[in-house]
Length: 238
Image (cartoon, rainbow, N blue to C red; front, side):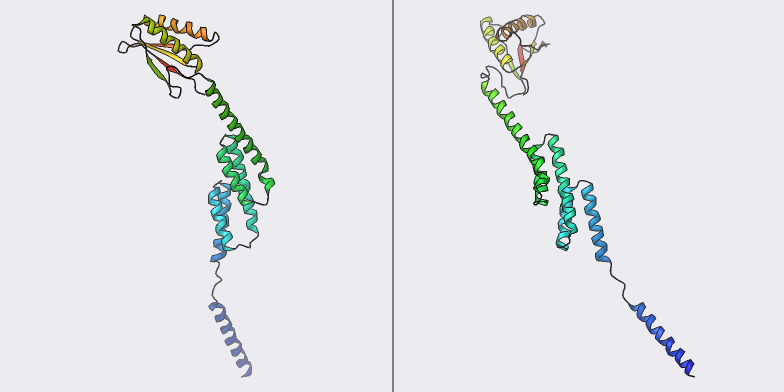
């Protein structure tokens, strides 16, 4: 009887142990899985150059575990991505976008000024070049005589020609020639008759050559019986 009792007690103990194991709740892996997914999403955003999204994702992870040292690595990766963007847009001539991207890189890595120093110098040089270009354009505009017949800011100006009054027409041609030379205008005569064009063109050409013998006059004609004689001057764009 004793061996049987011992086996019976052993069987009961084993059954209780097995039941206890089966009743143990499973380990909750939800939090680690969510963290892994969030990190993967952050890495994808950085590699896809979705940097604003990556900043938001990194900020959320840092809020959840602010003392985790691995965030510094992602912070640096993000700063370097912004720095690369700054270099690319600067090469395309977008100084403002370059400065914005550089400011984000600095904000992410404020203790690494060497990281942004070279690009910062390039942006400063680009801004200086922009300023010098604007100043040169302003000086050039100020140096030009005032327009006599055209609107320099317009795409083109159309001036009616007084071909019935030769004296008035000659005065018009003097003013037209001055505007053509000063504002580098191309010229299109619009006249109702073919025979009107040659003598009008000759009047203008003589005056232009008198003002600037080396000026290359670009002149064209349009014959339209429905219009009165007129000339269209188109200033060269700066």
